[in-house]
Image (cartoon, rainbow, N blue to C red; front, side):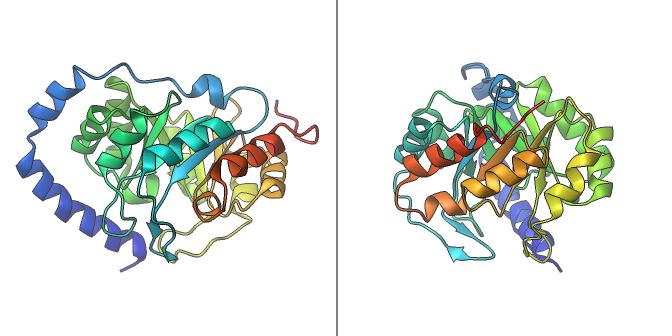
Length: 267
């Protein structure tokens, strides 16, 4: 069993407990009282390279990364640094996250918030929207074609913007066929957890113009942002480098500045 399979098995176990505790109808009712979701597209399609800054305590590959006692305070620093969106890891077993983290972040910032988790059912989409998420991660490798299409459509129907994550050429084609308008290319192989730095450069040309291209994993600093922009990135998603750095606000600001560098030409 690879890392992704192991994580999803745990997610399904936790999901069964949560569904027994909070019925779907109650989540749908909560969604009726949440402010409308924020559309991330104007920020992602704007000039330069946008930055999604991530609230990330831990990872299966590195273990504990940062304490993050106050995710809302960290998100405020990210926003002050110029982040276009905040990603919040909500998976608890391997990433030490929670939906409560997302709720706290949503209440603290005015930019779009992404629920980053291993979504395998529509129930999790309603969880995300009820918690105030504006975007939701859908991982192609974790879903059948039918599941992917269904979750993309359901996400949009309740106001969420799906960020569809890929790692191979086949997954890019599956994401496009499912109607994805935002495709995230993850340089980390989710089965082996190894980062393959050439992944974005290899896959970006397969993603049609008009679809937002996000580079995920392995972004360590401004030079990486410039390199990825030249390879076609509209957005970069950065977690580890920011939560392990000394100053999250200036860390984001440096990445944003790199994304606005004259060497970066965004069509």
